[in-house]
Structure formats: structure tokens, C-alpha cells
Picture (tube, rainbow, N blue to C red):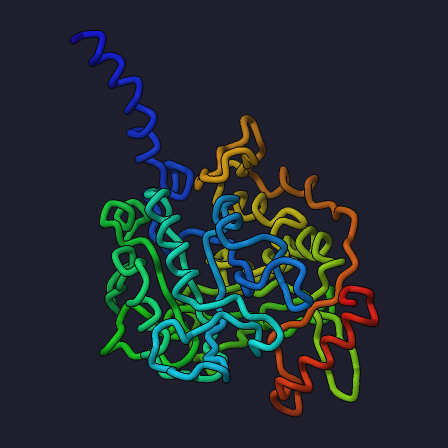
Length: 370
């Protein structure tokens, strides 16, 4: 019996110890949700070789490596016959003709399974309601999935809980939508701009990233609000109209020293560090290292053989100051690719069919699609 008890302690001790970690670090447990910096992947679902992709890796791999913020675009495809079917809501890049990641229900189920396997993690989803859909379409996708038990509901006017409090409650998935919020019917799908403001997202010059409040358009005061630093770069191509394309080949540089400069400027402007840093091709450059430095914790290290590992292990002896990170902010070899973002031209929204043909032409011209 004594031997069994000792064995049981050895078996369950690691699990007990891991239970004291919050987003991978014990020191984060006592911090409130709005005192932590999280890395967001822009258009998290848009990954792979598709010409409209903004990420190289799928969502579960992003989460496994330390990403804790996801950006989704809600679209009801034209081919959907029954828009009241919860599975009708798709994750698409402007138009589902260009990039269709499938039903949002499937992605939410994947995230729910990941949260179940990783009980010490707090994750945030930001919804870009591109076509101003009624709130019910997004809500029904959630309700048709297995993710609802993890949903956190914030009470307006109350302080944000600590990460440990959220983890202990099991309610550790925070959800924001940029338009169409309905606090009465779905208080858990929060109005982003009642809680968070953003810096400009239409960035085409690596030397021109700034810290102006871009959204919401009219904000009297930033006091008490969290904020997003949008740090992704676009090139401009003129094909009878303005087309902005994400710069995969420049991502390693964009996510390096310019990221540090941008975040430092915003931290000085708003007198506090950002809560969210949103990037394309997050694994290029040193985004995870830099977010760890902002949080004052060790950088994540990934065991590629352990695909189920949710919380990256800390590097032994790795530096956790911004100065330590600077030496790792060097670009890697660029990859030639032409992509498209869901940003409209100054003259209005791009028609999906012409948009798709323009992208196809760009892909063919660059040898991406044959």
C-alpha cells in the first residue's frame, strides 16, 4: 500500500503542478485578464498554400505553439440555401470564392477539444463581422458546437478576473465582435469597441506603423480600455483598382525589430503595454519571444514531436527582457508569395467575382497557381 501511494504521488504530482500554471506560467496566475499581453494571429483560419492565406500553420498548431488570440471573419456564403442552419456561417477571406475554411462550427469544435485537453489556458476570439451580419448567426454557430461550456461572460463595470480565477471556473474563452453585438441576447459575445480599441490595420509602409486610435473612430478617452496593436504589412498592386496583398516574403523582418519599435511607441503613447499584438505569419520573426518578454516570462519552446502539448515548455535559462529578445529579431530567408487581405479599396468594397479573378491573375503571374 505504501509503495502504491508513493507511485500515485509521483504520477499525479506533475498534473497537480501543471494545474498551478496559467497560460504556461505561474506568475501569470495572479494577473487579471487585462494585465496580460496575448499574441493574435490575423485571419487565423486562412493558412496554407492558398493565395489568400495569411498564416502558414493551422489553428491547432498556432495554439500549441503559444498563440492565445484568434481573429475570425464571419461570412454567409451565397451558395448557402438555409441561412438559419448554424453550419451556414463560414470562415472566409472576404469572399468564400477566394478562401473558404468551412463552417465555423467545425473550427469552434476543434478549439473546444483543445481547451479540454489544455485546462490551464485562456484564449480570446475576435470576430470581424465584415458584412454586418445579425448577431444570431454567430451565436447559433457557437451553440451548435461543443464550445459553450468554456465561454466567459464579462459583467460590464466589474473588474476583469485573474487568469487563475477564469481557469478555476472553467470559463476561459473570451469573445469579442466588432459590430452587431447584442448584450441582451448574447452578453458573452462582447462589443469589442466597448472594451478594446485598435491601431490602424491598413499598413503598407514598414516605416509608417503608428499608434493612432483607428477603431472605434470616435473615442473620447482610452482610459480603462484594452488595446490591439495591428502589426501586419501589405503591398499595393494596381490592376485597374487597388489590391493590397499581405507580404509573406517580408514577414520575418516585419515581425522582428519593426515590431519592437512599434510596440514600444504604442506603450509610450498609451502609457501601458498592449493587451493584444496581431500579426501575419506569426512564426516568422520573434513574435512569441517578444510577447513573452512583455509579460516578463521565459520564451516558449516547442516539442515538435508532441502535437498535443498545449502549453509550450519554458526555455531553460532563456532571457526574458526586451534586451535579451533583440538579438533574436533577425529575419530568416524570405519566401516568395502573393496573398490578399480582406481590406477594401478606398472607392468601396471589391466585387467578389472581379476580386477572385484579380487574385487568380496575380497567382498565375507569380507562378503560384498553374
